[in-house]
Amino acid sequence: MAIAAIIGGLVLLTAGAEVLVRGAVGLARAVGLPSLIIGLTVVAFGTSAPELAVSTRAGLAGQADIALANVVGSNIFNVLFILGLSALIVPLAASAQLVRLDVPVMIGVCGLTWLFAVDGAIGRGEGIVLFVGVITYTALLIYMGKRKPPVVKPSGTDVAANKPMPLGFSVVLVAIGPGLLVLGARWLVDGAVDLARLLGVSELVIGLTIVAAGTSLPEAATSVVAGLRGQRDIAIGNVVGSNIFNVLAVLGAAASITPGGVRVAPEALRFDIPVMMAVAVACLPIFYTGGRICRAEGAMFLAYYAAYVAFLVLTAVHHASLPVFKTAMLGFAVPLSALGVGISIVLWRRTLHAARTPQ
Image 1 (tube, rainbow, N blue to C red):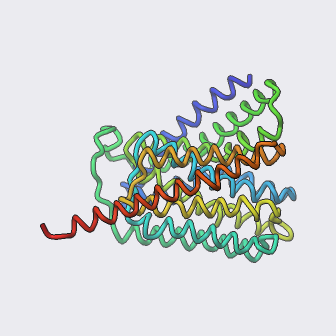
Image 2: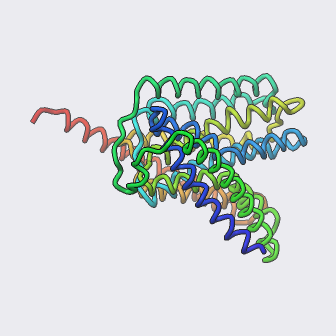
Image 3: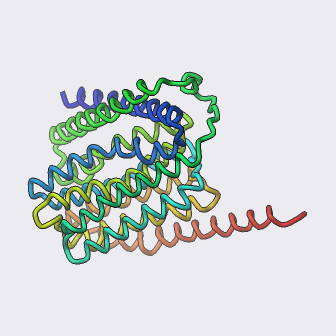
């Protein structure tokens, strides 16, 4: 039954991602919005439905740690794992709007969360501020999208997808897609947890890996399918938009309805929230250098996610190799990655300068 649930979950995730991407592209063309705007709003909000359900339910049940960890962990997973995997499969190109507006907004809301969390809790008033922020951001995106209608270019990867789709049918697909994704994620997580228990894997490892990433599986499936279908704006916009939605809407709603707000554990304030901020900031120079995420950068993101999970597990079990692991990461991996990004920026600026210099 556990294996059947895993297989069924994967099937539903794949089908839900395909349906949602098709509907989103059709909706973008029908209402005259760029696919990036649809990716940042409709697709991102739809695939974040599991996070919203989990965090609000946890807040009402008094499980503040789960409400916060769900948002922070999902944002880290979205950037390092989903963007990394998507770029490893198909190099992703970032639009100018992502670099100028959406990624800075993602960095800003992560910084605001950190600021709100300094006193050990995100109160109801702060939660309302966050939730009002998602309404303002969404209205701004729609306004910008309507001011600049998209130029539809056939991708050549899917002829059927380039044919006009009725507005009503697109809306139905967008409504069905998130439902399939949520159900598929639930089946996959439940099946994986049952299988892990049958194999004797500890509850700690399950919680830090399978369950933590489970609510972000819809984003993973949607971004990978969108990238393979040539809808790269949706692939990247889904991740960036989901991260913004997670902080503003999910965490905002949880803090607003939870008596006393959402408590912030000292461990989260010392490590996990700064990591969320760091991975958000890491997007900007990569997008800035040529406006694309290449396969090498995608592999680096995946490696850092593996290191993050390894650090959590080693810390939780107080493993003897933890000091060596921390030394290796801080003394070698992080400086080497920073050097690589710095070299990329220098080379990109030289290339740009050479292109502008008259021959």
